[in-house]
Length: 121
Length: 110
Image 1 (cartoon, rainbow over the protein chains, first blue to last red):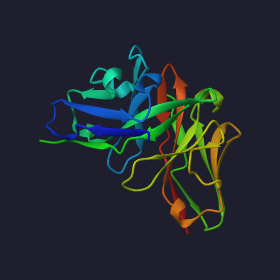
Image 2: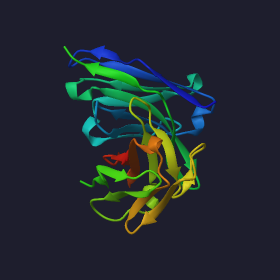
Image 3: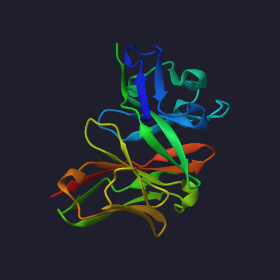
């Protein structure tokens, strides 16, 4: 079964850092683009970042460039999101996603169950 | 800045048909944007519904279908059921590695 399991969420003070992990199983991680999506309470989905299969290419939503860093360890089947200088508005559930390439199109499948990041003093 | 547009809310009667759309504030949605659709019930992670215009993800009932409607991508639910009442999101590729979700449509079935 293809599965993504996030961990590392929790409570952090404003200005602090947090590192999220995503454990991938049931598929060959190195064959896929991976990414993160977040959802603030009561709000819609926001794409955060993607990383290429080799880790060589990384893309971010403009508003988070410079504060968040996506990375991966294909040998350990892990994807990471390092979040620095956290702000109250970063409060959200963070979902790990796998990008599927099918018929020359990309789509997200599956989604992890999400991990909650709370930024508060 | 290009924004992905969705109807904030929509209402459909049980058994009825509803079409949700996904557009761009600048330009038309095409296959180059890789539109796909996701369903989310409260408290749950999103679920993949439709991709490749009209390919249903595994386990998705055939009452869900996708298409292009004018200059937008569209999701149609034919024969809406009570448990279709939830939020629906589309995502588009805007080029240069950037993806943007629409604001989501809250569907009410009543």
